[in-house]
Length: 545
Image (tube, rainbow, N blue to C red):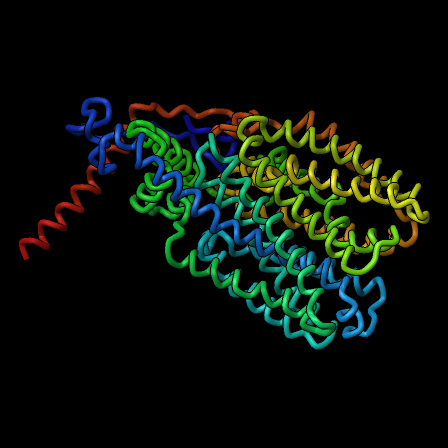
């Protein structure tokens, strides 16, 4: 079955898919058990052994490499925390006021919003691989400018460029991962985007801490910024050499044989018949969408209103938890509790480690078992209670000499981090991508990412002034927002675990257009046979020559 939205009988955008008429062929999955095994270069039984392991590792390797895109996002986001904490940076930049310090983070997020818009405009034209290659070039240039900065203007220019690149990467990587993963492992594979982000934060924080032991000077903050440069180059090499475009993208571009080969390689966990069936369904859905006129933004919003709003809402959720405010300005919070020197940077590094370990452990067990919706509900509840706790502890012990009380205040920040990074971080970007229609996923993922960055820039820019004027009461703003989100998630967020990207449409109430399975399989087998015959014919001509 292929899932499509209910557009009404008068819609001009869709036409009903007619049954396909194909010439009979002598071999098909229904009458020749070995047909598709020949196409797949091996019997189904072997595909359950070593081949399955090899394919699974291949897909996991691709996913890990792709997550370097979100690693860059996490590293560049995290490195600013320790950069602004170094006294050598403060003096070199002529003691910038709190508003200008806030701009270091806010202008970066503004660049991310521009990157999300760039994804909307050219992401589909260049494809997942080509677009990410362009972003690797931009992020490398931005990192070089940041590292060589001689004043705040140059530093901010570098952060804008880097923000543009990682903003688009952070929205593109989850789409790519969702399209190369199986329904049963999409939580694990897709969750690697969140793990990459938290790994980047942890790496940045420990580098910042280690550089504090260097002799006083500019190397304390220039070296951490410079260590960003190789990662964009490494990702570019991977994208150029061995990382494939997703089968769904290739099908949309009419590259059927290339899509089939990519699908077989990344889905070697399936039997011959399952490969044929799933690829046929995927191809049928994409062909159906290709036969219609793509709707305008306004029309698409009317048709897919709930799906788009859910995608936008889950991206905004990551902002209104306050996680970025805590991440950017936790050094300020520690100093307000009377903690100074290297201890501040050490606490920041431990915070990053908690974030990474929580994400890495979580994606192994939770997204594909507990489900995305339940994780979000529990995660938001966790955030509410831990932020109330952190606010109370900071109010009680902020201006006292009670070291134990201050320890409990810091504990509140860490407990918040464990809950957020184990329950919310692994699924937000993945969920935002998989709920969107296939044909419009890139554009509206860009819209959702733009909403995320716009909200985030306001909250982050307000951080230093808010903590200065209302102190720990700023937490209650996030508590109120998260309380509203509990209702939104409970009422409007469907579960997507272990569903194909095509099946997820049914969870939003879309009507189903039935395509006869036999017709799909027979047609797919015929095309595969033609491709195989053409290949053999070419080989015959070559031998004859």
